[in-house]
Every structure is written in structure tokens, then in C-alpha cells.
Image (cartoon, rainbow, N blue to C red):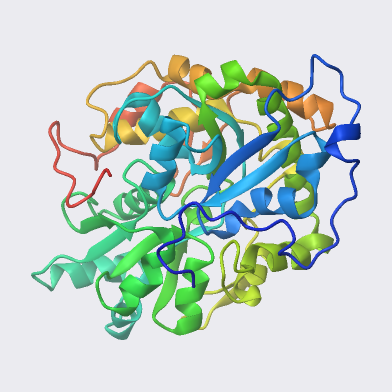
Length: 421
């Protein structure tokens, strides 16, 4: 596992033992002057997670150079570091939590900054993991969790990775769907993804919501078990995004377009089952996630073992492309996160959901980039999904949707011990 001092580390391009593409050198590329990237070297922050694969593969396989760029991946220590460095311009773009970007745009997770989502990087593939001591006392699902909580005086402590981020929303939604109030019935704290297993091993937390491979790692080390996957909460949910600032898009529009083209090609490469072993080797290397290759490879394939004796092939496993349906930055996806921020009191009033999503999600730029690399674009910017509680989300009335939940924050909620910085 990487140590904590991982910020600003740039993985060397030659680290992965794979055969890269052989694009022409940058100096000899013949690109229309009006389309040439204004900025050739682009720093891209990432957190050590399996779903940073599109960034890692783009570099290892040379997709960046094919499109006139040199990507400089920067490993960051926490999502707060990603937030701060994006806003300050210390990094150009990032593999980021969807909800983090909306939190920054709305000024509810730190200083407000004008943000841009260029594309969705992946769907599915996160999970909620409980500590082994809960399994030992018979807690194996939400029902037994609720019964156990009724029998004890002290609060259980659950961790997520960022207050407005995806993992907080999956944890909150899952608990609430089973009658457990995430802001009153349990304590929640923020922990960077690579530290989750260590915190659980030291009995500092009773459970967590995080991306892979940190759920698989807990199962492998026998310190925890997977109680739910995020795709059980919302099949084919949006997860990480390629994010930057509005200023970057304004100043470097061709670079932003080329960056999307690069990561679309990487995403398409990753989803080919014939490439899974290569992708797992790239991502599991020390430069990126630094774990056993098998932990990345198994859940990349959709092979799950929950630590309670159950094994299965998940029909909604982590995916990066699916013919482009994964990558389109649906406005309804961004609106959903805002609806949950409103539900849990992070937003004190309803924003103009559609206008904010239209401002943040760069659907026009995405369409240009997708067309250039032969990726189809969905016919509409809204999509319909059914979540774990049977509710249908289609983006048609987000304010009413946010108010419709029986379990939500009080008008002036306290958020446990969540930390915004």
C-alpha cells in the first residue's frame, strides 16, 4: 500500500510492462492549426483507485501523444487535495468524484470556484464494507445492522471519502433506504481511500464506503466484508469524472477537447475484456494503486467475493465505456448529486438544478470530442434510472425529488464529524 506522502508524484511513463501504441512524435504530428492543443503538457491529478485506470492507460498506451498531448499524472493524497489543486491551478485536470465538483461549484465544500466536467470516466464499482467484528456478532445486512444498533448505546462510526462526494451519497442512500438515518443514527467521518483498510484494521471505524481496490483489500486481509455494492444502490450510476475549471476550458479549448478524445480512447481500450489483464497490471503497479494485481483484476472483471462465503459475477460491474454510454456527461447525473446535497442539508435551498448542470457539464465540447474519435452521443442529456428504494430518477423535477424522502436532514442539520478540508 502506498505511504501517505504520495501527493504530486508523477508515475514514470515507462513503469508499466506493456507494449504501448507507437504514435508519431509530437514534433511531426500534422494537426490543423485551429485544432492543435494550445497546451501540450497537461497535469492530471488522481487518487489511488482502480477507476483511475483511464488516466493510467492513456499514458501507458500512448493515447495522449496520439492526440498531441503529454499527460503528467499526479498522485494525490486525498480528495481535498484534488479540490484545492484544481481550484488553484496547481493541476490542470483530475480524476474526480462527481459530487466533489458540484460541491466546489456551489461553494458547499470549500471556497466556490467555477468548475467544468468534461466527461464521465466510469460507472459502478464502489462498495460499502463492514468491519469483521460486525460479522462476528451477526450483522450481515441492513436489517441485522438496525437490530444491532438498537441493542447498543455507543454510535457506530462509518467513513466515506468526501462530504459532497459519491461515496458519502452511496452510504447515506443505502442506510436511509433501510430506515437508518445517516446523520443521526451513526457517526460519519472522512478518510482518504488508501487509508480505509488501515483505519478498519486499527478498529477506528466500523465500516466505510469507498472505491476499489480498498473493499477487495479488506476482504483479502480478512478485516472486513462487502455488505453492499454501489451498483445495488443505483445500477450503472455515475462515479468519477474528468474535471477541470471553466477557466481552463476557456483558455485551452482545443486542449480540453484533445484530453476528452484521449480518455475516450483509453476508456474504449479498458472495456475490452482482452485487455483486462494489461489494464490490471498498469493500475496495480506502484506508480498508481500499489496493490496485488489480483485485487484489481478480479473486480475489474466483475468477480466478487464478499468475505462471507458468497462469490458472484456482477452484471453491473465497474465499466469505463460501454459504447460511450458511460462517458456522456448527462445533465441528470449532475442534478442527482445536487438533489442529494439538498436532501442532506449541504444545500440550504434549491439551486437552479438544470442551469447549474448545464453550466458544469460540458456536453457540447464532449460531443465534438466524441465525434472526432467515432464515439456515439446519446440523443438526450437526461436519462432515467431506478434506485434501490424503487424511486425513479429522471431529472424532470429535482426539487420535488429532493423533498420527497422520508429520511432527510432537518432544516439546520449537524453533520456528525464530517470535515470539509
